[in-house]
Amino acid sequence: MLEVLLVDDEPFILQGLQLLIDWEKAGYHISTASNGKEALDYIKDYPVDLVIADIKMPVMTGLELLKALRTELKKDVYFVILSGFAEFSYAQEALRYDCTDYILKPVEKEQLLSILEKVSALNVEKASRKQDVLKKEKAYMERTLMRLLSGKYDVNDIDYIAKQTTLGDDLCYVEIQLDDELCNDEALDDDKKIQLAKIYSAACEYLKDDEIFCIRDISNSEQVFDIGFIYNDSMSKRLQCTDKDYLKEFLDYLVANTNLPITMLVGKNVSGIRNISKSYGTANMLHSLQGFREKKNIYFYEEEYKVGESGLIICKKELDALIAAIERGEHVEIRKCVDDFYEEMQKTGVTGSTMNLNINYLLFQLIHLATELDSSVNQEEILRIISETTSEEGISRGGKTHLCRMSYAYGEYLSQLRKNVSRGVLGDVEEEIKKNYASNLTLKDLSEKYFVNSAYLGQLFRKKYGCSFKDYLNRKRIEEAARLLRKTDMKIYEVAEAVGYKDSDYFVNKFIEAMGCTPTKYKKGG
Image (tube, rainbow, N blue to C red; front, side, top):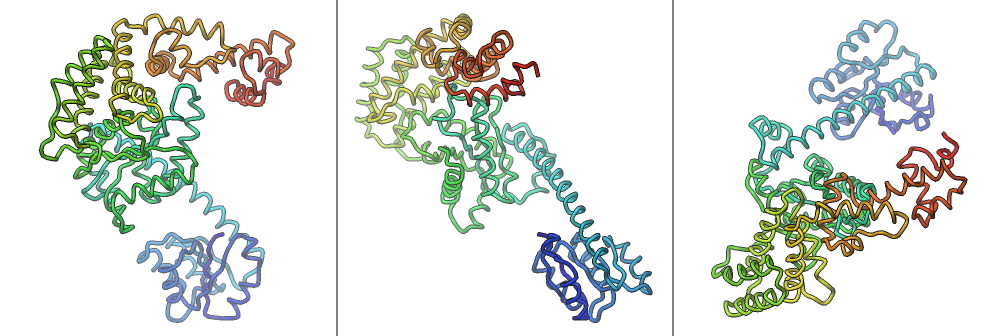
């Protein structure tokens, strides 16, 4: 409904206008004022889309009201003048102040309806133009923020941010990601994108005017399904709460409104937008650390990387020995080194901060080793997956048993990298899919069959084929289904079963997505 304000000093004219048409049916809700000054005061406090005002009134005329709206309040409301024939010259002057139209008295029903239809059409057009402008501004803001996050910005980017926003000095980068159970290569990319779109929409609804600091698919190049968000302390101050409370309430809102498991990684606090890349880097550190911490739905860098306490030490000798044992893949030696490390930690008096600092050192060194062997894949993500898949219920993350299991698995992974298993394994897996696409193939089963880490195999797939394993398998199934539909007399459900789909409806939906038409239409040559 558009809000219309009727303004006239003659009560009977106001009443006549109200009764002349069905305003609600026309898409309008009406309010009234008896002169221009009363109307101006009303518009200062309430939203109005259209003003229909008499041109001659006491206190403030319709023309004076129009001038005040344009020059003082800077309002672009639609404005229609009511005038007598002798006042036509006034109406002409009103047009110079962007008057939408004028109506000669006495007002006729059809004329009024025609102008209301015109205003409604203009409003739709204006809303569309405004939406286009907002999209362009949002896209430009996203590109600017991306340059700032990467540290590759210039003075023009800083000036643009300063002109467009009122960011405070205390900032941090926040990553919002689909939880691990949804982000794996057994799921279709399209399904993940749909889930991510729901999260992004909910985030924008919560942030309102601050949605310009929200960036969708920020890690697209790494095939990580996430959203980036630049938080500043003015957001929590408006709600009179702490930074942590604001972010926790934000996360609770996202979960409640999407019904999806979500993880939030909160980077280090920095001063000024120029330093936001430092916060971005610390959030990425948290990403790889997740697999070695007790499961949470929100991680704060300051809590996970406490290094300011006195007496913190790194058991470098024991950890370097463990790293060497992991490199060699010697399970007995790994177990001994883990025992030595925990024994040394007990001697020094273990605190949460001391343990975290030592684990951080270990993980950093392991990522460095793997990156030297293959820098083309996301080694931080692979380490996180290995850490999580070697942790079971009842085993404390980061505890001695978990550290041993993770070290065994990572040693095997490093061995695979040294042998450069990627040279031959993808060809073997591709042949396996060609022969057995109709079977219940999984990335986990194939990784075990060809003795390669499943996380690494998943990333190799993305690197070579530009999609997840599940998407690649689905593509092969649809290709074979298309061949069967054209070359055989098999029914739709028979084709679905033959290529590995147990649910015919699901098969039909996937076929439409891939081929642009139904299996039936495709079979008929449409």
